Image 1 (cartoon, protein in one colour):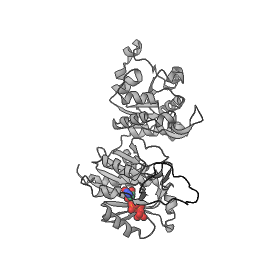
Image 2 (cartoon, protein in one colour):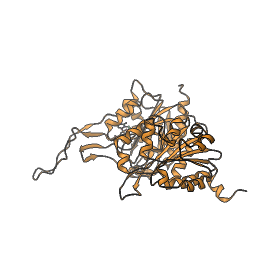
Image 3 (cartoon, rainbow, N blue to C red):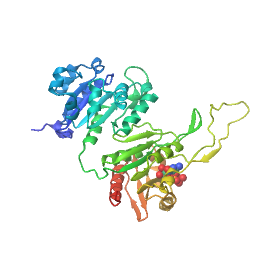
Image 4 (cartoon, helix red, strand yellow):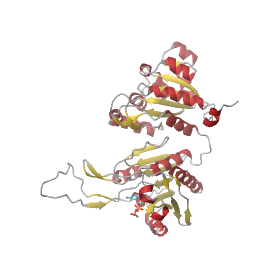
Length: 420
Ligand code: CTP
């Protein structure tokens, strides 16, 4: 007999085996809820706890929720005899580290195997998902950033961290562990066995605004939230693509399963994108600033009585899309975006040619479209037309996630025609 609850939840993880590694941090309490959520969806959960984790939650409560033995020691005669760390690391469909502490990230980035958790992570041949949680200063530290970049290059997936209040202090900033349901969604995406038409394809996506400095504290920016670009990156990843997202400064989290590079300026975005070539496709969603100041001041510009405001001399930024559209290593499929208020089709067709794109996703931001520029930038909905050499396809207004899913399907269809 099925209960109503099961019907609502769906056994999306039926038969899946998750090895959950709980690191030491306040967020460890959320791992208890995560175990419950995973089991509700049909997964079996086996848990490894670091010794620091045991300062925050007990093996007793974890064992009660997971209904299994909780593994804590590398050289535990009983555990090693019974399961052993190699089997532990391989007898799972996915390894999840939640919370992933700075210490656990550093250990894996550098290949340490000094306790059971790090040994299991090093010995596994399965995919690994990390949900970091730490103090914002620790997350922002160059060492942690370096370790995250290394782990991402090694194929480790990340979910979160999010911005928000820290449990242990009044500090706010990036470092809060993703909520259990977000982690579950990332796990479901990683274990999704539906057809993956973009498997083996590398796709570059740009997203968000760029910030162009005036001086160390001031910059020129725009209202792009990154929602559409991030949604496209996530949708492409769901179809199996190896997505490389280059994001300007945004407040939303990196999409699960997407290797994300963070940049500030157009120049940095261009360098990052070029560094990711060769690729099968590239989708330019970022609202790149058209201009930057000719010379950003090294020191904060001060008000000087009687002198009036400073004048800014602007120079044009490089057009990243046009650069890639005409590049010697041009990806087989190049997609650009355009925000048009008038002559949408003619303008988009001109951009196709000028920028060397295969199609332009034209946002209709005219007042008649009902959304407008301020609605598209930062909002959750979009109304687009797909302009290519073979014609124009008008899509109805829909959520940005739906635009992303349809665009990802279209990219998969176009790439199918291009032999690897
Ligand atoms: N683009 C880029 N690098 C730039 C400027 C734009 O890669 N320096 C990309 C954007 O990511 C987008 C497309 O080019 O894919 C937008 O082109 P743009 O000419 O800026 O179009 P609009 O934003 O519509 O602006 P405009 O009013 O200048 O036509």
